[in-house]
Image (cartoon, rainbow, N blue to C red; front, side):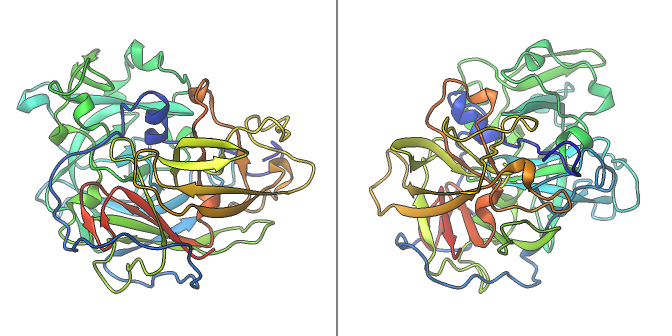
Length: 450
């Protein structure tokens, strides 16, 4: 957006896409056996010709809104653009009477687990006050913390455990959760500050949300790569001796920030992000649905959706664009636009990193299975790129917002990030590895209608 127009563009390319660029650290793989109530089946379909429908209210459906963000930033210079939000309730483990509910939690299909911002306020205007127990390393007295590195910044804070409820779905056990920006952990480790991106995002204003709900195609945010058995060296997790000292540490998979969907008793093998079509000029706000489960209920069938197999190691798929085969591509509701590199498109002079062509461009790319997956029929996707600085500041939802890859991707040429611009007018499925679905085992993506 032009800086005089309400709304600040936030380059939100979240954890897994960053992990691809960094050689698969956070967001790469997750173990465990499936508890999904669905059965396995054959792989699905070519391109869809169905009419999109948005799921109505149900226990496995959470309302999504795309708007200007939490009350503390809406109608300010920090207003959100192209961010999808849901409402989440956290409770003290095994105590459903001691809970808090937070709206404007960003939905991200390329990160893992719930991360709450410490200065976020709940439905009663209170910050997080319930006594969520700390996640201690191997049941010791020393708590764990994490430096979550995104492509546009990093977020630092301790780990706690919580029972998590989204709509009518509640985790069957407490789930490791990060509290970003906790005042008790104000001394950020130097190697977290010196990550490949140096923008600290530890507040609602800098993050653009009250937190993030990572519902990507794996269970943990790091997997075996951060355990002592599977990692070459400690990465991203820290053990802390408060009030000042935190040092690099391994973290068992059971202690890592984890996708809460996998811990639902049913509807736990994936999610669908459902957003309606928006005009080319944008929309002031958009309402949609986050549906839990794939093929587990009447409202989450794959139907004739196009299924794209993802790499079981890093969740990547393949995009072919401008003669380039980009094998580390992702479908990513946590990014607020299409992000790819094309030196022929004029970049914005004020909103650096976003594209500002003189007129809207009609472009095309194909999406296909991951590089090492079985071959399949590529799916052609037509998309538009508008002049970001010409988009209306009264709107917050755009299907044609696009930009270049961030600094964290310098030297990485194999990424096309299909961000939230892609999701409008489509129902987009993300299947979790190693759960079974009606189209076989995850990880995969699928999408229907346009």
